[in-house]
Length: 306
Image 1 (tube, rainbow, N blue to C red):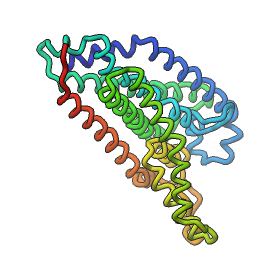
Image 2 (image 1 turned 180 degrees about the vertical axis):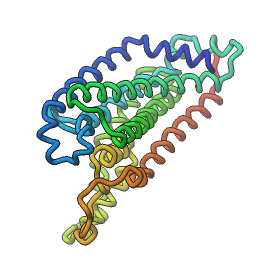
Image 3 (image 1 turned 90 degrees about the vertical axis):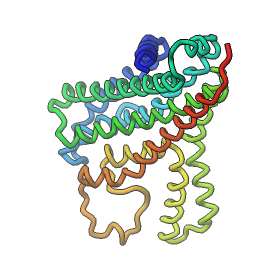
Image 4 (image 1 turned 90 degrees about the horizontal axis):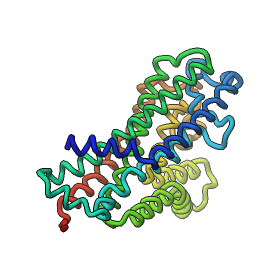
C-alpha cells in the first residue's frame, strides 16, 4: 500500500488539472484575504475584538462570497477531480489487470489510492489556511490568538472530511460506471443536486408539512423540518460548522423570543461550539466511511480481466 500511496501522491501533485485548480484557489484566496484585510478595521468595530482575525475567512468584502464559502463551493470539485478516474482511468488504460497481476493485494490498491487522495486534500487545505494566517499577519499587523488558531484547525479537519466525502463518492462512481466521463458527470450532477436543489426541496417539503406558518411556533417548526431534511447534503453540514466555528453563532436555526430572552450577546466558548457542531462532524465522518466502505466492497468483488 505504501508503494501505491507514494505513486498516487506523486501523480496528483504533478497533474496539470490539480495545478490549475490550485492556482485558482490561491489567486482567489489572495484577493479575498487582501480585500478583507483592507476593510477589517471598519468591520472590527462590530465584531468581538478577540476574534478579529476570523474576519479574513468570513468577510465578504471585495466579492460575492466569503473565502470560507468559496472553499465550500470549490472543495467538492477538488475531491471529484482526484477520484473520478481513480479506477475508471485504470480500466481505460488497461493497466488495472497488469497492476493486480503483480504481488499486490486488491485492498492495498484501493486503500492506497484513497489515502493518497485524502492526503492531497489535507495538504491543500492546510496550505490554504497557512496562506490565510501568513497574509493576515502582514495585513492586520498581529497574529491570531490561541482560540482563533484552534478554531482554524478544527475548520481544517471539517474541510478535509467535507472534501473527503466527495473524493469517496467520486471513487465509488469510478467503480460503478468504469468510464471516466460518466463517473465525472455523475459526481458533478450529484454535487449540483445536493448543493443547489436539496435545500429547495427541503423548503417545499417543510411547507407541505407546515402549510400555515402564521404563529412563531409554526415558523420555528417549519424551519426545523427544512433544516433537518437539508442536512442530507454535506454542503449544509459544512455551512453550519462554518457558521458556528468562524461566524461565532450561538445556535442553528430559528429560536423563539422567549428562548433568547436573557441570553448574553457574547460568542460561545470553543468547547460549547464543538458540542454544537458535533452532530455535523459525526455525520460527515459517517458519510465518508459509508461511501468508502461501499467502494471497498464493490472493488473487492469485481471481476477484473485483462
